[in-house]
Image 1 (tube, rainbow, N blue to C red):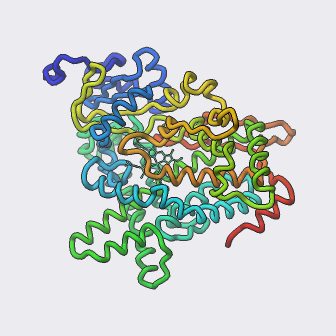
Image 2: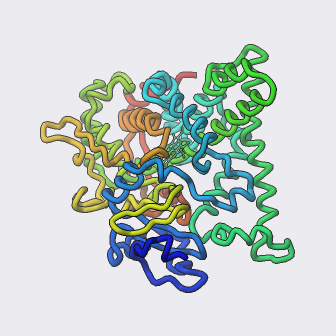
Length: 492
Ligand code: HEM
């Protein structure tokens, strides 16, 4: 039957498939992108795997990714069914939503809210929160990772709910906990029920496949994660204290509806906006990687600071408006996205129909991984010396900024491309230029005065999105002038 469906066409090449388990043992849980990149040297840029009944197609070249996921975008805009998330009742989050009317409508809300024009109106808020971050860095530089986390939380909560996040705020506890559990379970092979959905019906006395206790915790957290911030906005609207936000804007529209239509619309808003925080966590990863780059590449830091000083004359902090005159900083933003990818395998897409590509049969429902980091953004033909952080790649000979559309792949591709990418562009530009205009970053030293090495690629393993693991660096204010500038600019 399978042969008839394929009309005799072969599947893409891949390693030998064992009966029943297929390639279960070929797909490692840890750093799967490294293993896939190795295998692609033998099998080519489009590879086929089968784990139990599930087909996985791994795309390793820019051409294959563009031709399938972009040119035939509609066919590949679905997400794979992930039974563990259905059990946890977390399959409503936007990045996981299956293609369909519900996803389309919710996606439209975000595309409008995060389009370049709308992001322009958030710039002063981003600058304000970033200046607060500079103040925190001045007081407790060793806690820079916690400060980054707080900064990102403040930006997203302000933009989404008009909520002023405080340090150690409980409102984000459910979101953070569900995020941690979900990212660990999303990787191929992490939860067997994802490959054998029948296991979800395993009786509770079978210890190995007991998913229910964890699922019930997640169900509870998931409800709190979407309800608590919206309840805050509704209360503030009732009391007339609401600050304009995506939530208040959307809720005002909902108030014009009634009955089940109103309930449906409100649920969609809660779920769509509730999805934003976890998506936005990727920015934390890029911000943290900046400090690795600065500690490892002092010459980059020097050149960036010279550019900033020549424009700002050291008597003010940068704003987004300075971007056209800071090409090296803009190039650093691009290089950061390329050098330390946040999602080395992209976020998996799924196909809604059978397809044929280069004479290979790709069955409906197959899952598609996009191997960016090793295959495209670290391809030495495209980016010579790819492991080195070199912003100059994105400069023309005359020092002007040279855009490279390929870098947009760091945000995915086709219909599911990251809706937050314009916000990231604004946030990272303000972040990098602000940090460098007043701070100096070097390797940390141990008690004997020896430099502590900073290792790159030491990323938390086994997750779809990566965060750099714990690392130390020394962050010092450049001089008294910089210190005064920070203190004078903390908006309270
Ligand atoms: C450095 C920062 C970020 C990176 C690298 C990143 C990367 C990505 C990638 C690779 C995808 C999957 C695209 C695909 O399926 O082809 C994605 C989806 C998504 N991102 Fe981001 N992202 C970042 C920041 C953000 C921010 C700031 C937000 C929200 C404010 C956000 C919200 C989302 C959402 C909601 C989706 C799901 C879209 C859908 O499935 O239709 N992301 N992101």
